[in-house]
Structure formats: structure tokens, C-alpha cells
Length: 113
Image (cartoon, rainbow, N blue to C red; front, side, top):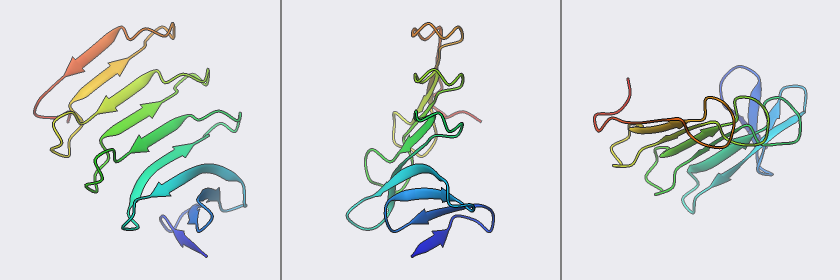
């Protein structure tokens, strides 16, 4: 019915949910047509709003997009994107003052270390 993500405390269940070991739903996931993980979305703080999202937008097996709501306001303050499809995140945007505008945007064609 479910598969361990690690030997720790989270499980991807056949119903499309991600569960903590105690049975609490902490997120959802989607598979592509080949059964590979395509995206996950989790509510890490349990407030009913998505806090993290990672997605394989081109279906090649690596995640190209990551969004994190760092202050639990329902908006992603940190975004990472693999714009050249080489497997490394190379574009990032950060909303440092949580006003909905990204104050810091950085691109590194070689990827971030």
C-alpha cells in the first residue's frame, strides 16, 4: 500500500497522499504516466496551506522547480528553477521582506553549489 521514502517517518501511499508515521497527511504527490515522481506539495506546519512544492516540469526524472513558503503566509518566498534542463538549479528568486515582490534574483548557468 505504501512505500518508505526513507527508513524514517514519511510514506507515499497509493492514494496520492504523503503521510507521517503517525498517519497525519502532510502532503500530496503525483506520478507521471511511467510511474515516476512528478511533483510533491507539502504542508510542513499543518496550517492547511502548501509550504513546499517541487516539480519535474519536463518529465525527465529531475526536479526543475522548487517553491518554499518560508514564513507560512501562503505565498512562496523562495523559488528555485532549472532553466537550462541540466539537472542543477540555476535561477533563484527570494522575497526577503515578504511583500510579494522578489528583491533578490540570481542566475548562475553552472548551477548553484
